[in-house]
Amino acid sequence: MTRPDLPPIEYAGRAAALRERLTAAGIDGLAITDPTSLRWVTGFSGSNGAVAVLPDRIVLVTDNRYRERAAEELAAAGVEAEVLIGVTQPEQRALLVGAFAGCRQVGAEATSLSHARWEQLAGEVPLVAADGHVADLRRTKDAGEIARMELACRCADAALAEVAPTLGDGLTEADVRDELEHRMRRHGADGPSYATIVASGPEHAARPHHETGRRSIVEGDTVVIDVGALVDGYHSDMTRSFVIGTPTAQQQRLYDLLLDVQLAGVAAVSAGTAASDVDAACRERVADAGLIDWYLHSTGHGVGLLIHEDPFESPVSTMTLRAGDVVTVEPGLYRVGFGGFRIEDLVEVTHDGHRILTAFPKDSPCLPSPPTT
Ligand code: ZN
Ligand code: ZN
Image (cartoon, rainbow, N blue to C red; front, side):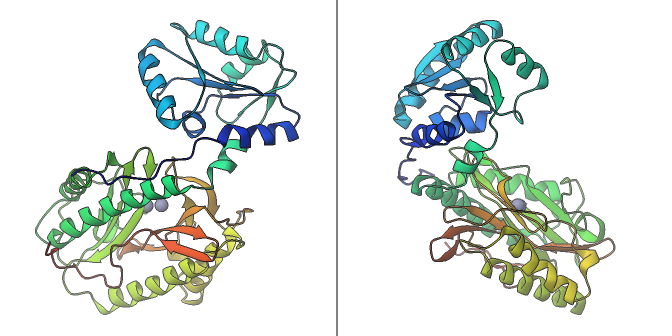
């Protein structure tokens, strides 16, 4: 399927926003080695590269494999950067070090550099830890980024709409995963956002991050399907839960409870709200129902170029939601012997509240009818 035209991602201005923060921190050069941060600043998506953000220019150091791709991607992003090619790793390091000549303080992300690389670089430039600047700027998605995440959501919605009606047809978990991943690509995705989770029955569905296996899905099972797509490096993330056949009274009661809990979590998402309050909105309702032992993970996370990024919605989060954040709300209930349910939506934080990007229905655990179009 061809892709719709998507608004451009606004790369222009990102380096300037970064420089402003670095200047405030007394840093005149930044070494970016984390591929996600590097992509966010320059548009370059290769697996090997380093960027020097300097007061008056950007230098991208990579290897011969990426000579053309780097030039093409920088041009497409509208980012002016000097591309330097080093054949060997020592050559690449020498080029990066050379770019920082004259800098008084060079920042680097200590959390993304190995200890060995840090030590090497620190021996050659005046290195200081400068973590979190790109990750913090990356939280605020522009229209082009949101459009890609929305398209990724549409691909997962459409794939699940086609596959969910067949869940009772004797398929294995792996069959369902394969169909979903194939169909997301057919609907325009570059691929799955992560290894699709299909967790079924009294044991597998009770594991929040079950590894999809060969179990056949049978009548009476709860089935948790966590599926997302990738578009231009941007992720989507959605979970829906089903019962094969007519739900028992307990299955229906717990699903209805979880849906209320999830809706309360989504309702709490707005700019200025503490991320921990979204978690609390869900957790407290589960505790009130006497089921806190069934609540095994935190309530959500940010999504963007990474499937898990800031801000995390957990009891210990210190972050406050901002317009432009894209977060999941994904409470779940799990118990070995029963199975489990999780309902997860991807939600954009807007200036006046929020907008849900995932569209697959969630009002019932019963299998849907096949799509008519
Ligand atoms: Zn998920
Ligand atoms: Zn998630």
